[in-house]
Length: 128
Ligand code: MN
Image 1 (cartoon, rainbow, N blue to C red):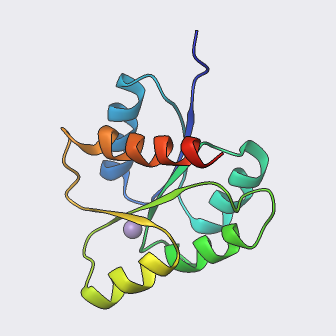
Image 2: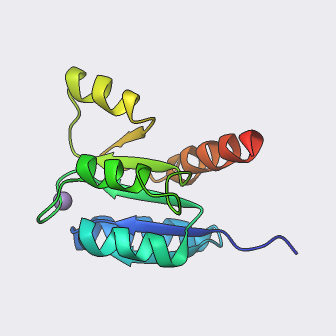
């Protein structure tokens, strides 16, 4: 049996959390949730999830700063991060590309969300 993959959702909007959780659990992923960047980073270090979905606007530290912290830690730097964000302007996209972060724009497309994350998960596996 393939091992269950673990996804960490760092998001403060309960509706977005529920939607992502429902889609991922239906696809048999293990889901962990954090409501802010600081605790999300700490959970990422403890649990080392296979992938993190990250809201950009979070209480306290924003998602971009959180990614930089994750990338600077040996335990978490290899974990792929996908931004799930309400809006992304051209300059955001350019900065996010430098962080090697994929962007999914809200509202999340329920038919393609899991598939898009799986593309990132599979890309990671090829590089290992
Ligand atoms: Mn938010």
